[in-house]
Image 1 (cartoon, helix red, strand yellow):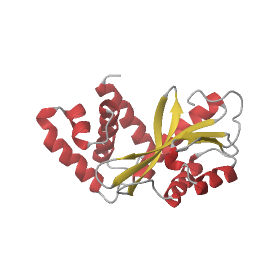
Image 2 (cartoon, rainbow, N blue to C red):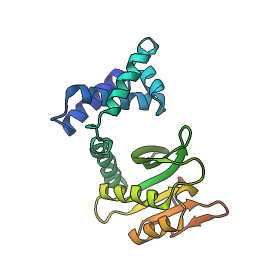
Image 3 (cartoon, one colour):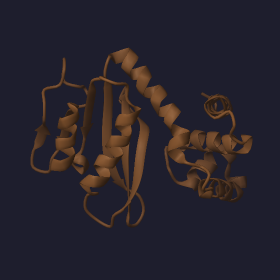
Image 4 (tube, helix red, strand yellow):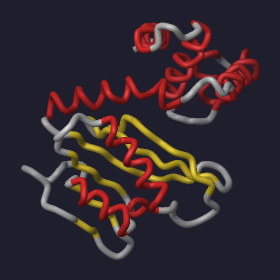
Length: 206
């Protein structure tokens, strides 16, 4: 889809979700989403370069920085309706929710924990959290806190299938998933831990 059309689509969606929001904030958020999609990056310079071009790169980066530094902008509140829309669409189509979890180092001493909806071999982020971590895995408490938020986005009594790497493979996190009766498979350093047999065929992502 052309960038201009993608921007207009997201702008109208955001206006529907947040009718009382300032239009300039709606526009900034829409452009950021388009830039992330087109650049496949979380770096502001790459996002701005995709949507504004190199000629206006510096001013665009500063514009995004001011938007993100605005204390009145709460990322989860803005993004939640979009995340719920994706979740409901998958539930209606498949009868279950397929989630993937991952942790990645972003810059020095920062780690990004991400929960995504898995759709046609792609990951659509629905929730994330930043962790200050020089080395090693994030704490189980941080992982469970993020997963508890994701649980609030899901329809009641829905089947959940979750896969991920060893980042979320702590005993505490797996115990929590087991308590929620989620089906999950998490890669371990020495073995592949399969907690339960998944419903139907094993998920192709495995």
